[in-house]
Amino acid sequence: MNVLLFGASGMIGQGVLRECLLDDRVESVVAVVRKPLGFTHPKLREVVHEDFTDFSSLAGEFKAVDACFFCLGISSARKSEEEYRRITYDYTLAAARALPSNPSLTFTYVSGEGTDSTESGRSMWARVKGRTENDLLAMPFHAYMFRPGYIQPLHGATSRTRAYRLLYVGVSWLYPLLRRVIPKHVTTTENLGRAMLAVAGAGGAGEHILYSPEINRLAAEGR
Ligand SMILES: NC(=O)c1ccc[n+]([C@@H]2O[C@H](COP(=O)([O-])OP(=O)(O)OC[C@H]3O[C@@H](n4cnc5c(N)ncnc54)[C@H](OP(=O)(O)O)[C@@H]3O)[C@@H](O)[C@H]2O)c1
Image (cartoon, rainbow, N blue to C red; front, side):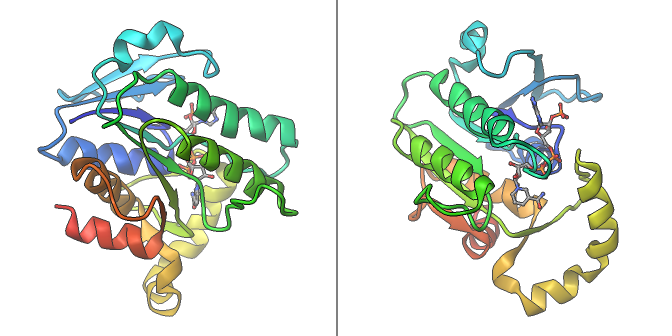
C-alpha cells in the first residue's frame, strides 16, 4: 500500500506515520509537509509544499497512491470562520480533488466528535467540519470520517498546538480513569493509525463515520 499523509508533523499525524512505518502492508509513505520532519526512514519521502490550496504540481507524487490519510487541521479557538474554513475545508478538499481518479482509493479524514453533518448548528467548527465531511463523502473514492473524542498521545506524539500540549500534560495521567469512565469517547494516536490502516487494507469498513468505539475495534482487529 502506498500512503499519502497530510499533517505528519501533528500529534495525530505523528501517530499515524509511526503505524504506517511499522506496518508491513505499507510500501511507502509520502508526507506532504510545510517543513521537513527532521528524520528519515527508508519508507518515507517528504514533499515540502507551500500552497495547500493547490496541489497541481504534485500530480506525479499522487499518482500511485492507494490511501490518503488526512490528519492536517487546526483548532477553531480564536480563529474567524473564514480562516478556520480555509484550512479545514479548502485545504482538505484541494488535496482530495488532486487525487487520481481511482474508485478503490481510501481517504480518511480526522474531523472530531460533535461534527455537525447538518451544517446548520450553532457551533462554527462543527458546521465547517460537517461540510468538509459531506463533500468528501460525495467524492468518487472510499471516504471514512474519523470522529475521535479524547485522544491519548502515545509513543512521544506531541501536539503542534501549545494549549493542547499543556492540556495533555495536565490530563494524560487521567487516561486510565477516562478509559474506564468514558470508554466510548476515548482513543489513542496508535489506534487512529492502526484503524486507518485497517480500513485502507481491507478496502473499507461498514460505517463511513467512525467514532472512538469503532476506531478502537478496527485498531484491535486490523493487524
Ligand atoms: N488533538 C485532539 O484531541 C483532536 C481530537 C479530535 C479531532 N482532532 C482533529 O485532528 C486534526 C489534527 O489534530 P492534531 O491534534 O494532530 O493537531 P496538531 O498537533 O496541532 O497538528 C496540526 C497539523 O496540521 C498542520 N497544519 C496546521 N496548520 C497548517 C497550515 N496552515 N498549513 C499546512 N499545515 C498546517 C500542522 O503542520 P505544521 O507542523 O507545519 O504546523 C500539523 O501537521 C485537527 O483537524 C483536529 O481538529 C484533534
